[in-house]
Picture (cartoon, helix red, strand yellow):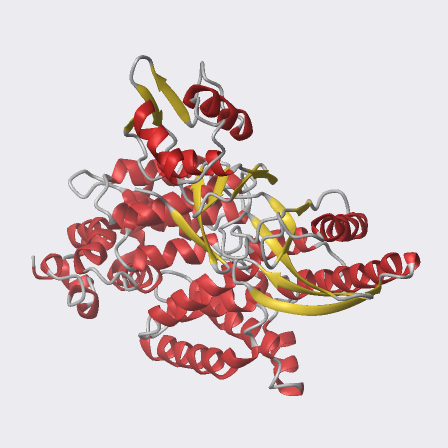
Length: 535
């Protein structure tokens, strides 16, 4: 089965780093163009349309004969070797064409999707230019543009020129400049469209007009266009990492890293900044950034309260209603600010009021706008968790654990989320406990949270470790009920699968019931966890 991908109007075949157009008129390999004779094209068509099938010499000869090829190209072995050279293939260790001695040849390359190009920016034409009479002029202009943009953006940001129109390809890049050309007797006109990838959102378009009778015109016009592209790129990077009160004088990379920490569940910054945020809201109630930060402050009041009964259900409902209203009112203002979109997704997910689809949409579009997954990992994992896709959630949380600085708030947050996902997915309490690694949660981890995690992961059929048993016995039934309520609201209620909610709550409910009886477990929790609630 051949793999195709849309590229403008053309449909291309992909085999690893080799891209061949559907008609086999040309190919690209590692960004370099490859052209074929009529005989080579006929041979390549026969191979790619019969992938992994033996093609005898007589069959290949028939294919060439039908192509009206050069009569001299009748030696199949010679033609295959010539094709191998153009494809960079090796007869002794083939990647594309394997020899079956005494029988013929087999196309062995496995079809794939578009081979990703890892770059900050790709510059490419809007149409295939291999056989265009002005190809060299177009390439020269794009190479000059590449050099000027690369110099302006810095060596750490890779800029690439390719002859293929890769707009529809899934490349590991942040930005794409699509260039169109039009020439007449005197003027070369060029339009460059800067797009943000992978969303393909148009950032800005630039027009260039070169007087072909004036040697200086091309340099001046290309320099002017590059300055515009550089300015637009810098502004786009700033916009993509804007919001949450992060200082603007930091690099986009540093801002995304800071955002990862600010969006972690237990970040105390939002709790401490309530007075300042309230004043800002009063002065400018239409400020979307201030609104989202206020929502995070309210969220922190819910999460950073004592787990042992410090908030009534009525107060929790009032705060969550204010979060909902605050976020929904400013959604139209945050479309171009991915960090605010991620924060909004986080808040809508947490309050659990039927906005799961909206939260998923916001998170996915925010990630498409930045292609920086670090700040998005917690909410992306939680959204998978809410859908009951626990294994996928664990993979995402593992990615966050791997990228986070050990001992950081973000690192601890990702480990706790993984622990909860393992419990919800029915993994053993031992596996969940290992995920949190209680001994290394960090000195700044609140003691109450350590206790909650300990009760949550302790197997229900065994007595608690002595320290956890003493702490639970010291709570009394009312505060123990508060702990169950806190766990339900912060970690269990979001799961759409009833058995997932029950799995999160099972261990703590068992330990509290053993000490205080089932009457210590809030009725609304029992009614939302199915068979465990009626056991």
